[in-house]
Amino acid sequence: MSIQSIMTARVVTVEMDDRLAIVKDIFDSTQFHHVLVLDEKGVLAGIVSDRDLLKALSPYLGSAAETPRDLATLNKRVHQIMSRRLVTLGPDATVDDAIGQLLAHRISCIPIVDRGYRPLGIVSWRDLLSFFASRIQGNRQ
Image (tube, rainbow, N blue to C red; front, side, top):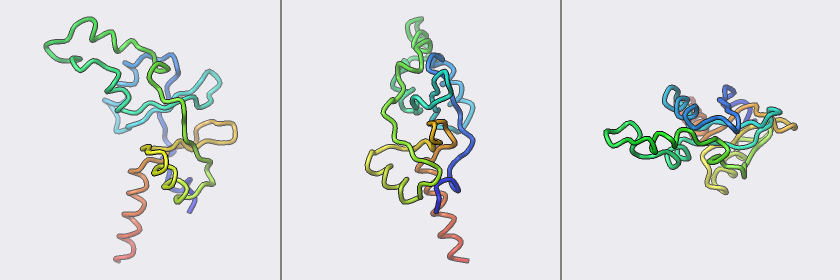
């Protein structure tokens, strides 16, 4: 089965020079766990996960112990924390291809890109679990 049939086509993107405050707002207001980072030409340049962001921000943000220095971590730029060594697949890749890549590289998602390296979607381990859960339920009926 083609990965395109189970990928999440609605992706959230940011630019390399966007501030981490924007990424935090995205994660706080949506159920996304990854944002794709595009260069000035709209080409995939990196990815930021919610875990990457958590590591980059001060643990004191929003607490009584928050200081101006803690707030300053929100001003860092996306390119400072993004993962640059990406594992990607094309839209014709299979579900098996995605599983193999997730396991081989110990990653939680794979951007799906066209030949120009522009994002078409994203596949996470959650997408794969949902796909298999629906197949199991379908076989029970």
